[in-house]
Image 1: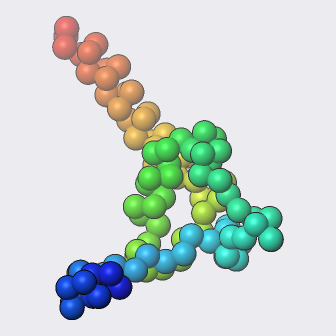
Image 2: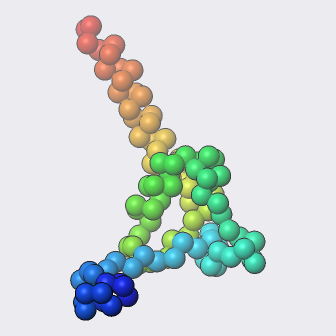
Image 3: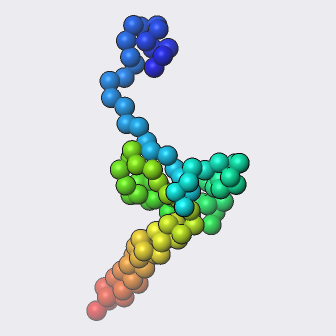
Length: 101
């Protein structure tokens, strides 16, 4: 924004959505000093990238802080993703067997 204002005399955009912070499960800001930093790759390896995507999409308004950790991601896997997976598996299992009858 500063460069656009200096070069062209006006802001480079009109509207901005400010995202809230991603904080630790206990609500504290993540910090290397506190030792509560969560690396995204191990979280995705453990819970799956879809769980992290669903968390970011549905965990509240964009400007609110998000508490991320193993517990919220495990809940998403259990309540959302496995429910969807089981429903789709049930449908494909019984949809293919009911065609012959």
